[in-house]
Length: 261
Image (spheres, helix red, strand yellow):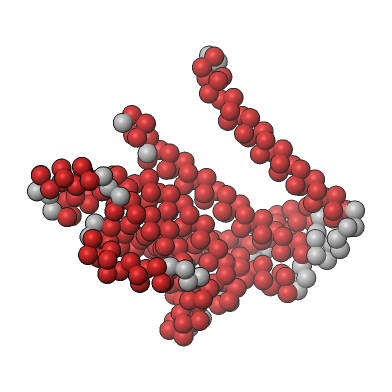
């Protein structure tokens, strides 16, 4: 291995070693707390019991089906939110009149938590999968929408002058100039949107009694099955970690061209 490659890999290896050390310390603290009797095992199971429940639930139990249901709900809501957020963001960001008319309404609706939208959504859709999908898309749309609006509105004035000189239509301006310019903002918003979609999916499953990890965790908590509860929480953490890592890698690949500009 050349000296350049060693220097390039050294920070990454150092970061991985540090992350592994922190994780090992947390697991050791968990093990000591549960085995030392500092917290009752009714509320805090041992790591061994949690892993056993996780393995059994994925192989013979319903955890695999619950995981697929949550993943499907999360991805469907995230895709819908991303498409709506990009479409509305490109339109609002490229139109000064639309920003002036819609900005107050957006600022009024944006702070609403997704859980506050669930009661009216239940009144409209009932306790159905469509209700959960609507709430997930609503909650996850805002990071993409706001990032797109701010990115398009912040396109350099020189680029707008070039667009006017070339007599580009608004659609051509959006696709040829604005979209490549705001792609980093959109991808960053989509990463945050993925996290929001997972959170809202779990909350929706708990409230609407839909099959998924949210319902599994809630039922385990109500029946004091601590190992099953922690197994579900570990799965949710793994889903969040893997999805965020995958999007980060995809973002790095899609934006690789910026390193050469």
